[in-house]
Length: 250
Image (cartoon, rainbow, N blue to C red; front, side, top):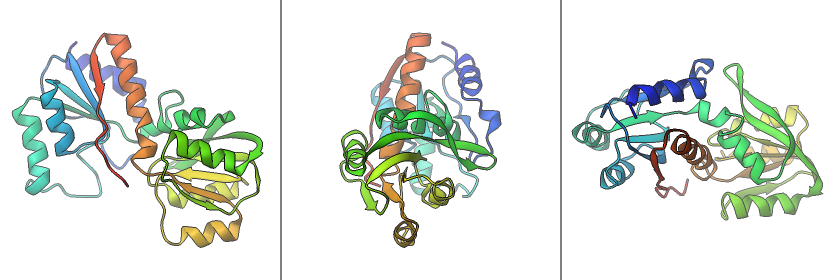
């Protein structure tokens, strides 16, 4: 299919204009005008781009792209190598950040909520005026049941601060580096909060507020959306799509 057609579809499907993000969402680097194969991954990096070249892909689709508002790109070192690999091999790079966290069907948080068998899910976790996470009911089940589901479905090495009630009714989820948003979970009276990363002060905060805090890994909590989106475009446009999970323990 044509690159511009795929770009328009993804931008509209993920409603990128709704978000005030830390990066430009959409096509970040222009490559081949025609796309037959797409490689998906969590983060733009040399290893992923080399894998895409090996797969003879024309496009790479990621959650964490190459361009960020908070840093000035310098074309040297690893960043230069990333750009060179894309340009020399005519690879398109698509990056969708917050839109791929917040999507109600293909977003990281909605998919995690489904894996954890939450019921009555609703948007949760405001960031720049829009909810990017989800919350739901856990039907008064044991806390250990939630912890086991996280370890089985997201990350066996998840860091858990078990400071909430023994029975859990409500769970909030914001994937990635949203440890500070635990405060929103506390304000809404949730029993447990799941994100990717943790900061030092969160331990005492969670303990004092009586909430279960789970840091299941930034990377590990954000493999779901890009895989689901890749499967979607594969089925809709008959594209070859392959997800490549480049290891990242964070």
